[in-house]
Length: 157
Ligand code: CO
Image: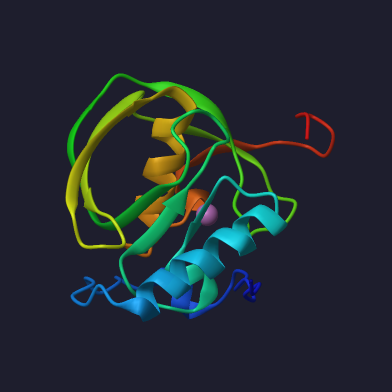
């Protein structure tokens, strides 16, 4: 188990378009494991490769429900609908929380660590986490979507 160093804003690596993954090898598996350990250690529900300095289309999400670990490699949103408004944070912005409007439902096509293509449908908080992580892979940060920032102590956690 290895914990990786999280890249904080401002760092230009957080704002670049990430490259698609083409080799699904042991190195990728190791990277995903290390990203998972890092996310858990940091108490996050998602982590994208640029946040550890790697500009590739790799992100993980685990909101702690029955969906488990979701591996988002080369993800594309196929369908989106509805609207949800709620608090959001990011491991690359320690202590910063803002209210962000997201789609309430998304249908996403992605690959897992073995390169297998799958479809996932998500709504509510899981859909929010997935949209946040996919944005990272295109250099888009949640701060560009914040309606308003929360004051310290305004939200739980
Ligand atoms: Co983030």
